[in-house]
Image (cartoon, rainbow, N blue to C red; front, side, top):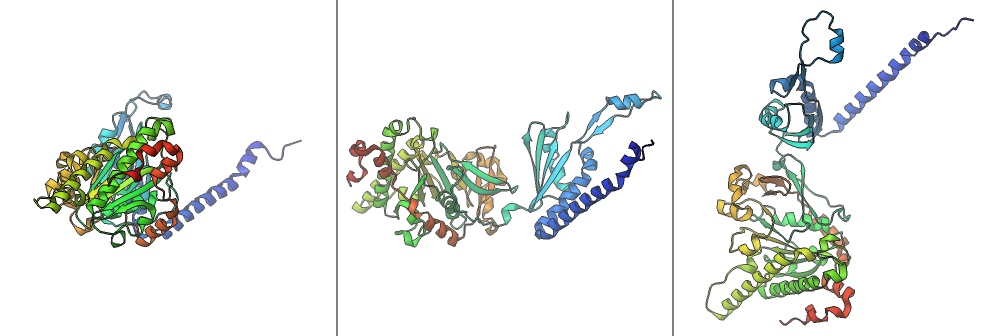
Length: 468
């Protein structure tokens, strides 16, 4: 009996169905892209169009910029097909390119080829910026054999941003999310094993806002406790930390004597922790196990630090007393910065101009992380970031005095050479106040927590029995 549906006819009989499915997938993909484009904001739409131009023009652009390789060895298939014995034409290989977009520009990943690697892409960076109509292009190693090309059409540093805290504890206790760099990439700094941070800059350019971001992100964690000395005010309600004082176990204003008492208490806490860290945690360094609710990371914020360290000149009794307090304050904070790292103490000092008279060099120079907002003089920039900033004129904070750059800071990042500029976000006051109120019940005296673990063992270093 003859087969009514021979195999060939069965296969060709499904062609219309396969074509219909392929057409449906194509139409669905087009509809998805159209919807995505329509729903995007104006900046993102420009980036979508830019990404399309980059993809379509890459095969032509790459050889023009010498980002292609010539393969003179014929493939096996080409050798078999060459029946006339003529030389086979060499192949021109172009690195494959995958392109994504965001509001600021494009992010492309390219596969390297023999003779076309990171160095060649970096050399072609300025030409890629011209061809892709970008303000700047950065090329970095993404993974072995692959480079990451970041092109920004708009300068992220010129667009103010906002941060809306979630109220959830951070995934990593000691990671400080700072903002976006000049390529709109998120920047964070790991403060694990970091004893001190300095933040400098002209008034009104973002120092307090930067600290506000840290408080908003870290406050939901019971493994972090805060203390603050604010040299701008006499009482908490007068200043920037009026809402945050409920999430701080200690706060003092510009009174040098009160600040001295706080610094002494924290030095005694440091001593008590140093004496008991092995007994309580079983390790030499708290960071071997990480902060916890019973042994939290203690963050001391010294805002307008020059208030507490400034040298007072004069021969009258009151001036001599202030001078003695300032000198002792410097000695106590030096103790915290130089000896507090392994037991979980972090000191963050902010000032307008971090020269030696504002933050003594024996404190400033042992703080491994430094940031600076706008500065007026090269001397102030060098004091904040070190002499190397002279070799990076584009990142020098003296170029950030324009009001456009309020909230922009320069820093020497841990993970890359040189300096980078960062757009730090603004945290709305209402949201910061909400986080402070919601987390107020997490506030605890770190020395009381230590006493709860050690009991009578801490009697010999009881903070509350210190001499005035």
